[in-house]
Every structure is written in C-alpha cells, then in structure tokens.
Image (cartoon, rainbow, N blue to C red):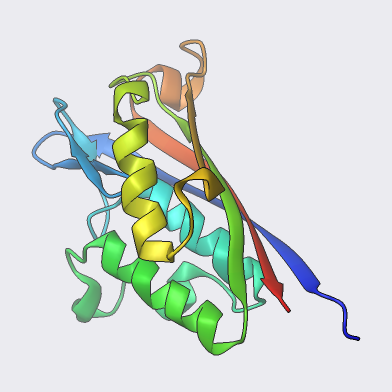
Length: 162
C-alpha cells in the first residue's frame, strides 16, 4: 500500500500600478483608475498562484516558463498561463489539493469580487470552489502598497500524488 505524497509551494509577486492599464486580479477585470504594469496582463494574484504551484512541484518559477523576454507572452492573459501551469502539474502526476491567495492592496475593494474569482480559478484548476481561498488586506497605508504605488500577492498551494 503506497502513501499519498503531499507537497506545498509558496508564491509571491508584485506589480506597479500605472494609469492607462486594465486592472486584472484572479482573472477578473476590476474597475479602477490604475492597472498593473507588466509584460503580460500583470495579474499579480495569478502570477503568485502559478509560482506556488510550480514551486510545489519543483518546476522552478513563472519567469522560467513564461519569460518576459519572450514576445509570445507580451500582453498574455494570465488565465492562460495558469492553464499551462495546471497542465505541467498534471503531467508530473500531481493533483491540486487546495490553494490560498492573499492580495495586498489599498484600493480597489477586493471583497465583492472574491466569489467570482474563486469560481473562475476553481474552473481553471479543476478543483472544488471550496479548495480556493482568496483574501484581501491593506498595509494600513504603509509602504509602496499603502501609497497606492503597487499591489502584491502571496499564494500557497498543496499538491499531491496518490
């Protein structure tokens, strides 16, 4: 009888807020005066999630798989990057157990969008909505996040082989 093998991963990402860009968080476009700057759509939460999943499977990081020097990823939809990461996890024989994301932002308010974010990410990862935790916090107006210069996100992931 073989035991189930569990692995965890941690992801972190940060992007600068700028005028003239759409704001994408957890695959959902939010109305806001600023968006995140990046080579792709700069969805900081999905990027942190990808890194958590890749790290759990010892598959390096998002920059390794989707480098910002590659024109194929210019303006890329981060939901597509997450789909590719899920395929890499699956190809290595792992299943996703659960994920936990924390978004750090002063604005806009994230809480009203969390159910839609959970539904979307659960569908991409092929997990139950209860296996996708999303939380938001501020930095109490401290640091670059408090000054509304950027947004960061942390993510953890549990994967397993049966």
